[in-house]
Length: 352
Image (tube, rainbow, N blue to C red; front, side):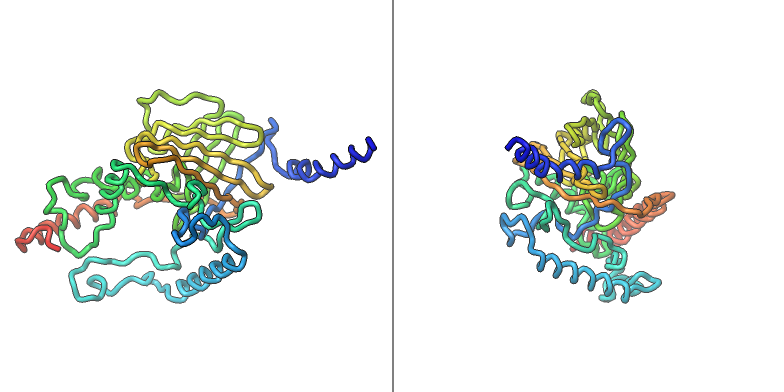
């Protein structure tokens, strides 16, 4: 009877022991995260409202999504030309003033091929809490801040100086009035985070690990996060774009705690009070499971959490030279001055 019990225990624990044995480790026995990961995915950060609290996606639906993405990419390749699908000279072809200069077509976008899986199941969103997979309600201050950002950044470009009817300074009055991503200080969409989220392209992350530090190189804008292990946070007066990150090991899980953000973190809508806890854990020799919890009472009415896998990649991380030489910034500011002159001469500032 004793031998049977011992055999049963051995059979039950064998998969666990085998799984742990497959995980690469450093010389001090910690899981080795060193490597490059491509976090591109078509799974959205926020779940579509129609799916409610449905966390997982059927295999059939995931395959339909993958087929749709493949068709879109194929169309992007076919339609791409040396001019990158640019609109006709003089604007958008509508006969109006030169305004909408177009954007990327699908050829230039790389957000993965399919939905990701966690524990063998396709997910409907990266956000897992609240249960509906959506951001919690924003505070009044957070909502106003986000609305101001989007009204400036996403204002329809009709070829006029629409900001001249504002009392406050315009978005192009000087370089520091522009967004941090336009100024190439941090990447857009919280690619550098924390939390680090996938975006339209440049989704590679490179991890270099030592006993005392973990460095995460983010392809978008070439950001670098340096996580100090078994350390203390810097004084609250020390503020950084990506916050101050410290980490420690809980078994085979790396826990990272980040505070001390500047007034404008890379996470849209967040405040300087943002607090993010991230966890990195190997699920196998080629995949990390990345999870996070966001707590920012100045921006959201409740904390929110999410998770998604980071698959290993053989792709190199090239330098991201964001508008090298700042020629684009010079063009934006000069273009704004010309629009202001034209609008004032027309005698109708801020006309819609």
